[in-house]
Length: 408
Ligand code: PMT
Image 1 (cartoon, rainbow, N blue to C red):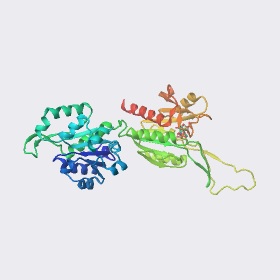
Image 2 (image 1 turned 90 degrees about the horizontal axis):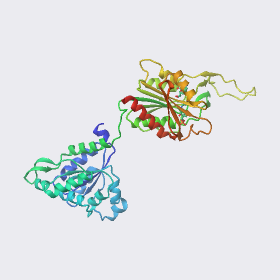
Image 3 (image 1 turned 90 degrees about the vertical axis):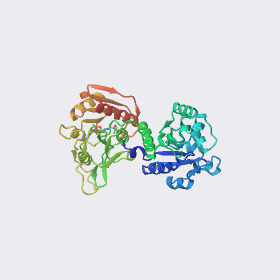
Image 4 (image 1 turned 120 degrees about the vertical axis):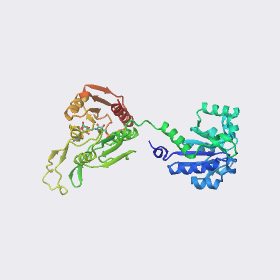
């Protein structure tokens, strides 16, 4: 993942302690902001001897926090919240003094109080004179902090502001940005489906009877939308073709909204090629030859409704050919002899896997929040029964199975 993708939207609490390198922190703020980070700054008394609150606040576009005892800050934010409402706390420059206080657990100003109160990871970018850096006290403090999980970038070696040469220069802003990105890369969930395109269908279809009436079914789209979200979380590029539902668009999926089975098929075919297709939609098997005008109750009895068979999307996607997805997964909604009927469906439609769910009255699967599925593979010869779980959980488990399929 690029630095941009890793850093976009991340909340950084930047603590600027006293040291000539504080001027580089202004550049660091700019680089983080360019990458979409929200940067809140705490300036220590020492730090404010080198950079002004005004320049820090202008670059961060945020209020700068300086005083533990400011009643307004405590009322508006509080040092605990300040330290917790961040994804990472960065101390740059980290002077010998602040490293010593961190190691000792002192909390005598806003910066050290926030550092003691935080439940987030901390990255330090030490900056000090070479003799201070090699002093056994600093060495011991750094060892203590690293043993507690504090991360470190630098210091670099070279000419120092004090005229001496050696280790102690704060790392350059871009090296600190890289260390921050590396931290978030480690935290990022694995994306085994990165580079793959997943096509998912969800929800019911509406088949018109006339311009104002239609037949539908009770599918809410919860299961299909959850599958789309789970595949996107594992890194897939997801196209979700959805019938009419009230479900919000899942994060990370491109959503195409359709009404009828024929529209759903057309949208699916237009979205090909895909590496994997999951058909969770409850597609109407039949449609009406819809009347052009609203049907009237004219005393001659109910109208004669003529049904025609809808195309089968799952069977169409499963057909061998150059654009067949490498893995085609269907769902089977059954009310009796669930495994037997689901296995027959898998073979008839030619898909690779099918998830059988019992949708008998009382099961609460259509429209409900949980599901109990059986995963049939190998022409229906292998059956895995999953315990009833939330539809999100079922989706996550399916996405992991799909990832396993593509990675082994
Ligand atoms: O939407 P929810 O309220 O969360 O409910 C979830 C669900 C019960 C709808 C879902 O878990 C489910 O079972 N989806 C499939 C419903 C269905 O239509 O099952 P079926 O057994 O009739 O069809 C078998 C498969 O063929 C399905 O993958 C279906 O998408 C597909 N199909 C069916 C008919 C058709 N014309 N085209 C198809 O692609």
